[in-house]
Length: 404
Ligand code: ATP
Ligand code: MG
Image 1 (cartoon, protein in one colour):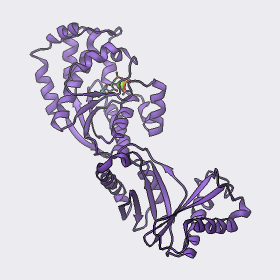
Image 2 (image 1 turned 180 degrees about the horizontal axis):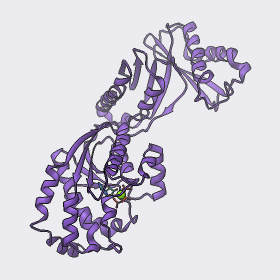
Image 3 (image 1 turned 135 degrees about the vertical axis):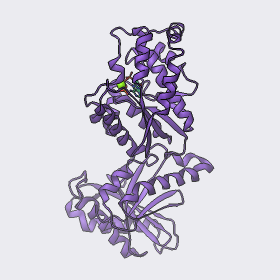
């Protein structure tokens, strides 16, 4: 599919936003322009509820498709063949060329050559075209059959394998047939901003992706405990952030040094409560960073019952550490479902690389599974006068990077 000069972008949900749809469409166009910028020159435009991308220079088709199918808001992407002229002969030539590009030379053709059924569907927006849409359907169908019937092509008007769309708009005719699925969702930047607690595991990259998919700009924070955790653990989290950023766009990433805080909790609190207290402080730091950057919520990869700190009681006590909303998009998913999701978005292989997490190092053999708020607060009272300064320092010294 080298000779494709145009794509038609299909989007679903943003079409339901009433008057705001222009805002959504404009943001989607902007995201598309940004993502394609490194690949060449493209004209991205809105036209009667559709978005067209037209290549104005040479570009790498596979690379462009890879980038476009990771943009939230895009439901499907149709490679379009544009007729040279607004005449029937030209449209027929474009349809044949389109078939050769899509099915003859294409490695991603799911059929054996031209062994499939088809139907032509014409939309004649420009009523000045001398043939009506039914005539175009029939004639193009006839021309395609004449060319490819001997190679297996046949017509099925009820349940065709391939729907060949012909669009006559303005003085242009477009032919397309294939829909490459996109991720769906809403374009990033249409729904505020959130701070994700990103660790090196399987769950939090999926959670970050899921909230980003709802149009939320994502930032991330990682709690690092050198020398108990290695530089490799940090590299791994950054790598995960970069994979997610292929979808969400650049992620502002905070690397927070958490060592002194962990040691302080370790020295002053009952060890079976360490994980809960540590999480509460992680949340408080995330809330401060979120407030600085105008993020409206924090996001985690917690799922009910997965580990002791994710029982209903634990999640409740952890939640109570902050004022801001906490979103846990994988809260009701089984581990296997989260694993499948991470495989789909491409984070799984990195997530399962071996690493030490700050939580696993200081973890007790028998952590509480049903913490009581008053007991946790009592333990935290032993931190008063020591921990505040450490939290301030952790916030102030956080290293910032943009992952993309
Ligand atoms: P994950 O697979 O996302 O690492 P997990 O199953 O290992 O999660 P926990 O270690 O209990 O579970 O962490 C629960 C959530 O807390 C994570 O999904 C993440 O959002 C956050 N979290 C845990 N450790 C860290 C850390 N070191 N830095 C930032 N966030 C963390
Ligand atoms: Mg983890």
